[in-house]
Length: 387
Image (cartoon, rainbow, N blue to C red):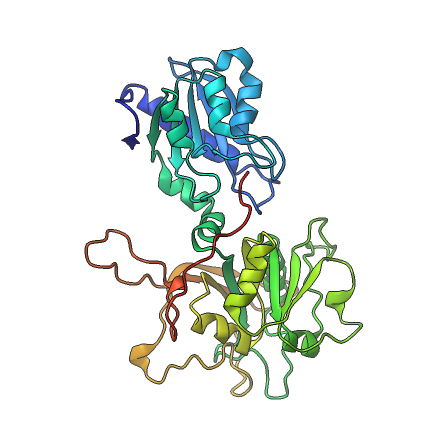
């Protein structure tokens, strides 16, 4: 942990670490919207390490975590240490700047985990330091970044985080030779897909999938009932959507992205303040995103089924030799137990393999900004994202 102003106290470090863990738990409170804002928690500590007040952000337009904690503390906030998971914002948006609120409340010291990557909101540490507060950064930063991994990547790279979901047979097929694909994976896996859809703010398919399968692309619970909060349904491609398709039924918002370029599609979604795309398109759309280096996570459901022919789970990636194969890193393997007599499936979760760090750098670059077959484009600032 680095001090950004003067010499911060070294005593009470254990209290502050415990407070930061508590702040992270508050930030992760169930039911808080996962988009478009980050999840943030704050704990105010007295000099003896006692908790004065706690707060957390509950979504866009609601008080920030620091403001929530200050309101609960009242006059008792004076002289406290604010332990917060994200650098206090320095921006007036739907709510006022947290850095100024901390100064006005008489907080003496601020310890935060993650620096704010948003160029619109960052700078809170400098404001606090200029006002005479002691500021320390980096306490449990890895944990804070993990909590907001989707939001952080979206803001840092100027585009939504992309999770590619696929279901395949043991021999890598997503459909039989006659085009049928219902159902390769079991019912339990399909329920699990709905759980993952609910974690995203956008579900993306191509116009070909809409024409062939007519999916609803909504999120439903285990009783097949639609959830109250639905992700945006995004359809990518230049072809018109036929009237009567279920994505046009009004059960959730739908947008037609008239482009075949994955970067252009993500740029449009970024303009709509979308942070997390759940990619469920067919083999060609999946290949376009993989070739462009725009897949940040892969969730693959592998069923104990053999077809021997039919569509592959992903289209042509331009790879002609095993030596050039893409080898994502496996982060989780889960057996999805079957229901109603069905066999289990296996869910694999993977992330792109990191590129070698440039000489003289301690940080490997994120591969999603370095496509397989074209140079990286500079990311555009993503709008919004301020609490």
